[in-house]
Image (cartoon, rainbow, N blue to C red; front, side, top):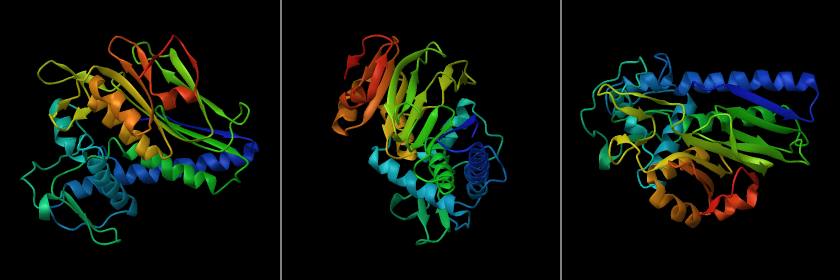
Length: 302
């Protein structure tokens, strides 16, 4: 998924840590082979080249991802949408895997995907992307695989490209300290929060940006409502959640909402959210402030 993977194990012997790492790598590779749009051999790529609306069998994780993506679309009011793959391709983020041009909706009642009961058979009306939820699901599943190898007394922190999932006590008085990076000056921390479980995901334009075919600087955080990169005055959003997939979904949805919407919505939903605006200022919701033990400067309360 284009992200470096890092595992921290607290309280386990070195031999156990090595076994856990092997299990994590195998599990993440399984998810990659299932959900990557950058691999022609993945289950997702094969689905995307299947005739629109036709049933296709795949790895159970593909069906789980599509079901979760449809739910995320509903819960975020369309600010998360797995169908932005064509926008990303048009902007110049090419996966190198040919996908058909969408021919319009083919599924009943306007649904873009359907699942055959609880089976792994799925159908989509247009090609879809796992971005915005796939990495969170990979962390969820890999952390679960790791936990099966050690007891609850051992703490686990699994990180993939800045997104992380935590289960169990950390090395700092039973807690894990996690930094919020400055997206405008990479390597500099803006804040440090503390936690012993759950997940933290960040949506940022600091890394995945490029010049599109028209010569414009663009990024991967697409607003499905406009079909363009979100331009709401934010450069990074971090969200803490009990589940890594939903942390990822909400960091994207809040980013798309922009400066005007992020504070009121994050507060209304009780989310712990940290965000950086275009002027470099850091902002926190009240729930996030409760979890923050240090800031580089005085943050502005949402």
